[in-house]
Length: 241
Image 1 (tube, helix red, strand yellow):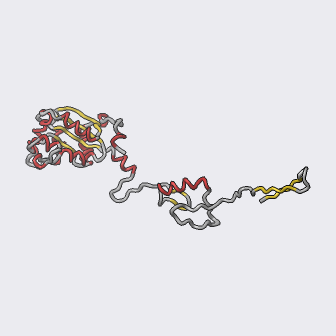
Image 2 (cartoon, rainbow, N blue to C red; image 1 turned 180 degrees about the vertical axis):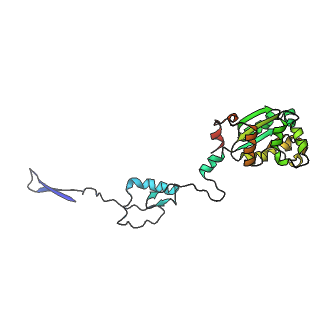
Image 3 (tube, helix red, strand yellow; image 1 turned 90 degrees about the horizontal axis):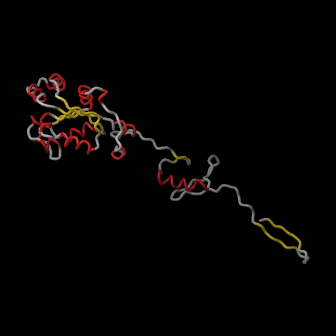
């Protein structure tokens, strides 16, 4: 406390008043709520008042990311089957080859099949309606050339028009095969394309790539690079996080 004395003009005695000391500028150590606060060390400065609220809020958001009062930036790393953020964004551009066979075209199922892929959230990148040549079909089914049904399969695919398509999206190859159903419609579950629209294996209305490698090979076989349309759908942000 500071004391000041001044004389009174009418009295002989002096009046005395007291003034409080100025506020101390020394920083005060504020303990954190819910945690035992260590004693302040000479090498580390305590938290000022203006940072106390931020630190308390950061404890709720990043309880294990604090070290000596500094907020560490969380890093995303792949662990096991988990994907990094960049890996997720990259896999959104996976593509597959889907072809509606002549029986699917003649039965008027083009619109229904396209609708299912669009409603799932996949993006149509390329599509053509054509009568495929025998040479193209033989090259497409080259892996089955030693099978006894190979000649009949090529003849069947060459008997009418085909709708060849390229679809893009997250895990589109695997998900596309699930949407198609089993090769034999009798083994396909209701809700799949083959389970809903066909009966015999020789008329299973649709083809889909069985792997990412096969999809790339089939896309290159049926389409030129200039025929693939690369664009971002306005629904992209409503489908992917």
